[in-house]
Every structure is written in C-alpha cells, then in structure tokens.
Image 1 (cartoon, rainbow, N blue to C red):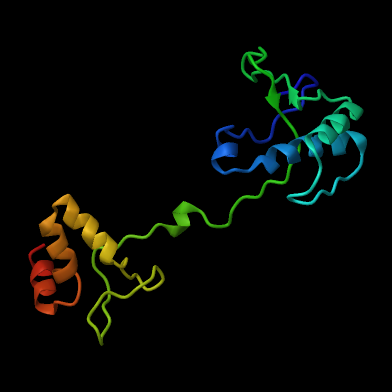
Image 2: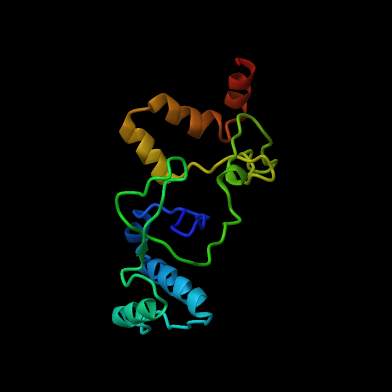
Length: 168
C-alpha cells in the first residue's frame, strides 16, 4: 500500500517492460496518476508524443515526485520497501485466451474416412499435426521409435494402428 493507505491493485514484474519493449507502459503509469490528481486527460501520439521533460513537469505540477516513484509499504509487516517503486494508473485488460482453454490432448480419437489420418482441431477431438520441423527435431534427438510410431502407426497405417491399439 502507499503512504496514504491506498492499496495496489496489480503489481507487475519490472522485467516485463524491457523484454516486451513496452516503455509506453511506464509513461502511461505516470501520466495516468498525474491525470487523476489534476482531474484532466492526456492524449499523446505513439512515436512523436510527449517528451520525458514534459512528463517531469506534469508530475511536479501534480505534486508527484518527478521520478514517478513512490514509497510502497509491505502489507504484512507495515515496513517500507528498500527502494521506491513506480506506481500509477493505467488500462490493463485480461486476455480472453487463457492456457487452460487452449490445452488439448488426445490418445485415441476419430480419423478421416478419406485419408485415414487423425482429424484436426480441438473441437473434433483431433490430433496435433506433426510436421517436417518436428520430424527433424525428433530425429536429431535420436528417438527413432517415437518417430516411427508418430509417422506410421498413429497416422494412416490402418492395420498397424489397430494392432497398436489392441496391444494396449
């Protein structure tokens, strides 16, 4: 929480800013906090917008530290953290696509009547395509039996597939 007792809604890892090359996220934090304190709105173009010095001036006008950092206190102990932290207001959306919704696995399932290959797609309980790059990767790893199983028995070899399924 902050000095005035305001709790933090989201705490982001600072390593996410340079790895995603999203410096605009930090600028939005500072301008968002200043906009709230000054009861105004800021609109700035993406690449040719507000300068660093202009942001400092706006922060000072809003009576905020010109570095944009604040002292944050540990919610359990009440002690301040060692270093001041960038705190502000920004839009943050939860992505609709979540890992749990995307996850799909198949051991056995339906096959195409024409090609006798596994159907594709999660909605049809289909298999994942095993392409050329995946084939070379498995071959370089030295897993010949896995490669034979994937390309022969689990693909369009009907007799081999039935023998493999019956042996389980």
